[in-house]
Length: 347
Image (cartoon, helix red, strand yellow):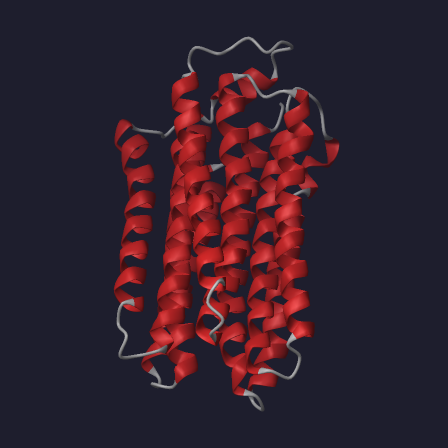
């Protein structure tokens, strides 16, 4: 990877973050109706995930082009966690505002986005020793590399990602236990967020275990399957809600779940890539970045149709805007998987 391409791949997450921040702010500032009060803050805080993805991208790229400094080693993961904490606290502040009912849904969803951001920040943290993966992959055995993280550190990082996922799943069931429409909408979206967090467990585990050189053949199948299952669960869940509540105001949430399923499939591209190139040759590795491109286009095309529907039915205002932001997330993930492909490519 040359220096110019490295700048491009680092610029993509930042540009997508700026898009989410400005577009979300624009939606929120342009009116005070219910749909804008939900869509605006949610799209805005999708930018936090993009910033955390930038931290991951920069962490890996700097190791590839040999510009990784001690400052970057600590600053980039900290940046990701700061975005996660800030997003989560903002979500709590928003849904505690009981004077505006729309903020109940927006606040809970934003807390979920904070959990995703925390998982991505954990991926950035374990990527600080990414340069060990090509070296370990070239070794025929599974002897632990002492330069990698210790087993205790590995369990800590995997535990952090698992904790965020468990919180999201628990939050989902608590919200869905109350039959009101706001609880149903927030709980359903939180369920899709839980699927994304669970998918990120696979990414964190794949990276840290390959750095330790303890990534087994069973994991080459298990982790990609987990992510694909999570993407399928979110997508099918969304389709069921769209059809089950057809003609009712709450069925719009199904489209958001489909968008979150597309994010899971985008994450699968990285997990699949790491599995396929581990201690083996995979000639089609350079084609895997097509996956997040396709998911980004799918999200944007679906958003385009919902924009048209929103002209006649207000309930489609929120999913059309949120899907646009999720498309930006998918495109950002294209940057990450391209970096992984370049960093793990055999000479």
